[in-house]
Length: 369
Ligand SMILES: Cc1cc2nc3c(=O)[nH]c(=O)nc-3n(C[C@H](O)[C@H](O)[C@H](O)COP(=O)(O)O)c2cc1C
Image (cartoon, rainbow, N blue to C red):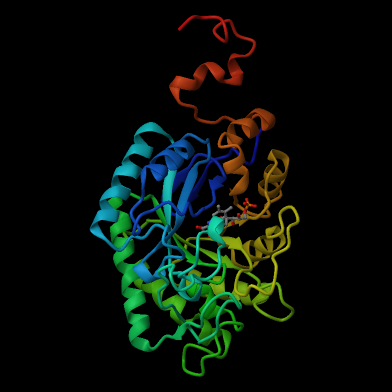
């Protein structure tokens, strides 16, 4: 049996052993942006998950662009040094490639950690002023952001560029721009959060203008062949607002600027609308984007079983799948999927005696050391 999920893939010049990606997941465990021993442990564990690629959590390109006080940031030398240590460790002990999600939380910054409420920080919790395309809060529990002027845009764009240079020095294998979930880039593209009446608002072309400028500036500092992608919210789950067709146009515009892949997520721009919680809820729109743009496409969102993931790739609905919560639940998800689908997955030598190909083998269970 040949598994599509366990077949190799290439994003630009980056060779991946299979189609399984660990989705970026904030750990809220950094100190002023600097990764902590938690990251060493968490990412070290995922280095041996069997996923071909681990995308490190949304990492703020500016201090004010972090979501919470615990979010990682890549705006300081101390953060760059610690990330370099963590990634070198992960590569030494595991087989996964590592990417980073570069992010600016915009009007959803200055929030509490999820286990401390998740909404906008209150006075006494060290809140900070936030920025956005327009002075529109993401929900009643957040303060109004300040509408950005062009000087702010230059500052944020340059911060993305500096962060991309730091990511290269750290040794990340790819960069993913966070253009989803209501954070700064997506909030420019969505008409719910962007009511500007200058060149950066209005039509889809205007609303895409700033994210495209950021993408262009980042691409310009990356070596040829280096993979650059974006995670997008492909729909806001409201009738007539940021539809699949809009997202196709958005992805095509990014592709023309040198984008190599897109991760299709959705929602997050307003607290009023809930994202559906049905298995593979983003797959139909990922399929549309893949079909109509031809870009390498990754689907995410309640993909949890081996058969489901296999079918998505085998039927050509997406080129890759990203798993978030299923990987936290079982960091060896890919090992189990390989067993079920007849795929091969890299395992560390130290754990080889647990490999199914040795069952029922004499070496398993019996020997003393
Ligand atoms: C703990 C946690 C942290 C997350 N942090 C991020 C993040 O940093 N960036 C991002 O784009 N999505 C983030 N997400 C969303 C996931 O990447 C993923 O898109 C979402 O959980 C749906 O996929 P799943 O059903 O496989 O979990 C996070 C999700 C969880 C559960």
